[in-house]
Amino acid sequence: MEIVVIAEGLKQNEFHDKGIAEGVKVQFVTSLESAHTSADAYFYIMAEETIQENKDAIQQLNGIVFINAVTTTLDQLPSNCVRINAWPGFILSKSIEIVAGDNNKEAASKVLDTMKWEHNFVPDVPGMITPRTIAMIVNEAYFALGEDVSSKEDIDTAMKLGTGYPFGPFEWSERIGLKLIHQLLEHLASQDARYQPAPSLTKETDQ
Image (cartoon, rainbow, N blue to C red; front, side, top):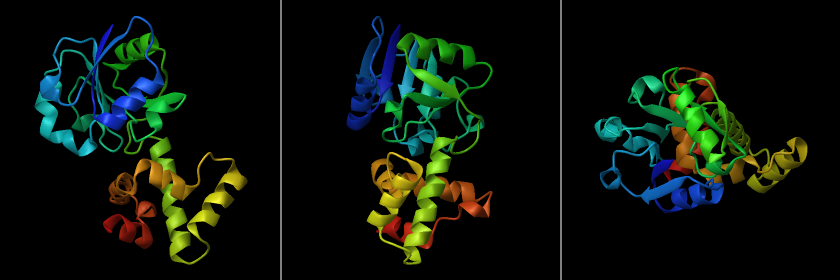
């Protein structure tokens, strides 16, 4: 199986560190222009905001495309795309979240099984499951911070000790990037006010 990974430095490193099964040939490129169009599958792990400007080029790839689309749903993507949670660090998770239409589900599983990557199909909603959950946890932590409930360090410690999470909410925000979390919350808030970003989170994002 031949796979082309369209990604930049950190994302290429994460993909490599995830592990590549024997018999899978991987080509790393940093742009769609550098990707040949006859691979078995593609991983487009560039910034999500670049998807719309590159839709035509993505559609022309002759294979299934696993695309970094945490917020963007399938109806906004080319028909050969499968959504993947490629927020920083999440490709390295034991099992990755993906969203596929009925036309791509079997092919997506075949590719990931060949790569020996565990995966879970999740609903086609903005934020999938894990990003949406973590974004809400981070948001609540920023509400608490804005109300002077405690410091970032103490809130992180309390969450890790109380829930067994590997990271506290502010540690998550640093690993993922506050901008990505804020973008998802704003998108979700347009449909549900519960996701309205905390003022302190918005202020820090704008700094």
